[in-house]
Image (cartoon, rainbow, N blue to C red; front, side, top):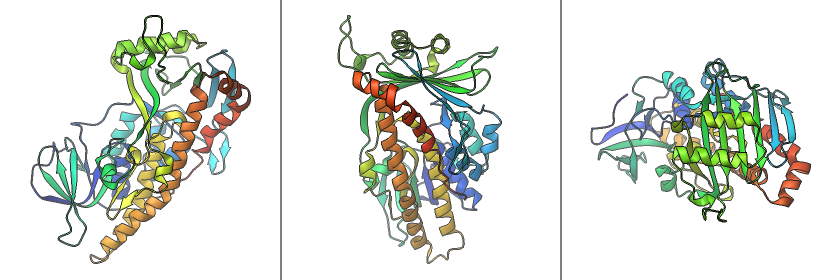
Length: 420
């Protein structure tokens, strides 16, 4: 891939900011429809952070539309069920079959390695579609030719003229800021996650094992016979411990974070095999980050698209991970946007293309607005109930709402973004 853009005043018809899941999904969808695009990625090479993510039914529908679904099925275990445990009592709060039929057909979920999917998407794209080390720092309007082109200023000092700009540049999106979208809010929660490898086989059932309560939410899930992914979210509390420290000041280094998670889990009723998975994780395999989200109410009235500019993925709908839908909805975005934009461009005359593109992006925004707000709101709500250690909330959750919260996991995936 090209290291960057060195030529001043270079021009491209469609520029996608960000080579994450949303950006590559849009690029591949457009490519399938015969439309060329260029993807600018700020990193020097393919993103490797994040380890893995839950790929639910809705995401596999999107991946099938893009032509890479079966590649992911061949490399990752299908998860058969969900077991939710109370961290307070150690009892099973809910068990659920994840192969049940939804309104649109049978459900399917796998834990997919992020780098494997990114590689699969990239492999389907023409050479030099992705330009690494190309970070957009600012955006200017230029309408001298009447096409509404944007001038993109890159970190290396070069510029690029784009007739269409699609922001898939993550939670700190420069494109979302240009559109005037609300700044993502702090949820007051933090997440860490890791990867444990068992060369001789781990022996876990192909199920999601989740623990809720006691001020945290944790889980473990296998993606192969030898690898498991684990996660842990909590709300840093201001009350100090015996040493005068509180959760908000916890050391975020890998070693300290690993020990913090183990201490929290050992103070609750978490099964030994989950503790072993955390202990087995290599130090450089443990990450931590605050959880942020965009107000769902703000999205209902926001400018998701403006002229020939729009956003997708985390640039549009950053959300907490409680429904495991962030990556899934990013893939949905990619298919819907590629369909809308591709249909507008293919067969359009030169004189009508701009108007067709503007209308296509407006149509995409209309399709994705409510879906994005719904996922954010439901994720935040589920996280609040599952993580709380408040006595009343814990009682309601464990005795009355466990089934509702578990079933909510299957409500959001029961969605079809359609074909290209």
